[in-house]
Every structure is written in C-alpha cells, then in structure tokens.
Image 1 (cartoon, rainbow, N blue to C red):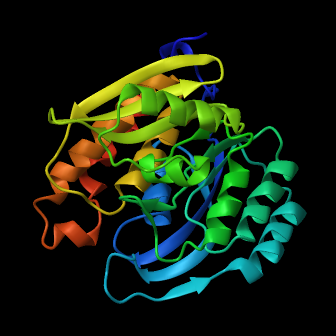
Image 2: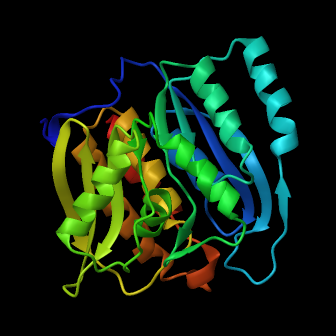
Length: 290
C-alpha cells in the first residue's frame, strides 16, 4: 500500500495549461459551484470549461430561489465540443439537476478516456439530501462512483451512496473505515471523506485509496457553517492536484484554504447565507505554481 503523500494523480508538464470540464450548476447569488470552481482552478493555471447542469437565481439556503434545468441542451452542447475537437485533461463533476445528467458525464468519460475523473457527489448535508435531489437522482449519482479517480463525499453523501445509516458527524474510526471501504468496493479509486467532528475542537478529513493507506488530516473547527465550503474544498483539492501536489498534500492544502476563507467570510454582512468568501485567499492558490 502506498502512502498518500507519495501518490500523485496528475503530472504537470512545464508551461502546459491543463483543461478541465467543470460539470456543475451556475448560481447567480450565494457563492458555490461554478462560481467557485472557475476562479479557483483558473488561479491554479487551469483552463476551466464549464458544463452548466442547472441555473439558479440563488442557492437553496435562501427562502426564495429559481432553478432552470439544462438537461435538454447538454447533448448539443457536447456535440459541439466534439466537432471542435476539444481535448480535456480532467472531468470534474458536482451538483446535478436531473438523473439524466449522469449520462452526459459518462459520455465525457467515454469520449475522453484518459481524462482524470473527479466526482464531488453534491447531494446533501446534515443527514438530508438537498431539496432538488429526488431518490432517482440520488440513485443515479451512485453510477459515478465506479471509476472515479477521486471521490469527495461528506458523511451525508457517503451515507446516501453506500446505504449506511447516517450517524451524525461524530463517528468513530471504524465507521470511517467502513464508509471508505464501501465506496472503494463500489469502484472509486481514491476517496476523501469529509467533515468528521469529535468533541475536541477539530474537524477531520480522511483520505484512502484502493492502493493507498488511510490518512487523517485535521484542523481547527470553526463555530459556524457556511454554504459553498464543499465546492471550495473540492475545487481547491483539484487545483492542488493539477499543480502536481500529492494526494495528501492536496487534502492538507484544501483543508487549510477553506478555513482561511471561512475566517474571511465571518467579517462579511449576512455571512451565514451569502456563501463562502474565497476571493482574498486566491493568492494561496496561485502560489501552487510558484
């Protein structure tokens, strides 16, 4: 078994700018999804090619929001990419608007077989799926686990994907190991399980793979929750990997940057709903290429 500090999922070559398909929703207000993925990955010197799965007026923690499902346009959208001969180095998926959109991601996998597959199964939190996630969509998301080079669920999402009972965020190491083992048995190559909290003021993320031994990364637990931190975490982790960092280095980097951004956010008005303020910490991402 390899140590996560020695495992690299992408080798950056010289001045080459890698191209990433970001299959996420676009939210007009409340920072999340493509509104995070595009600037964070761009700061890491990546060419981000959005594939919008839905359009939101605001994220779903606001009492009033509008959603437009883009499923009907995705086939022609990707047809145009094929006609142009676009090349991809990674396919990064997050929030989906309908079960049929899993097929669009699988199409990308077929057409770009050498591209890195990063799956952030954005499905829910706090033991419950998000309002737009039907049982059919949750089941379809499970199809993306098999073959994922990296899967980044929180405990709620791991529970939905595996069928394990959700036991809150204060789970023991045996539960963590069972959850990760289940996701690896479903076909994920590497897993980062996020958001384990004990009564000690720390938050823990665990990383392991089919050939990678389990490792823990922990840091200070801040006393508030923010919308968009999962998107920021996954985007920052991918940014670090595309810059050539190891799997463990990427997890450590993403964990620190999210905490830094959360501290910035707490000084903003209405910070608990407006979304995580990452803008002033993007310099940390650009330093990945220094």
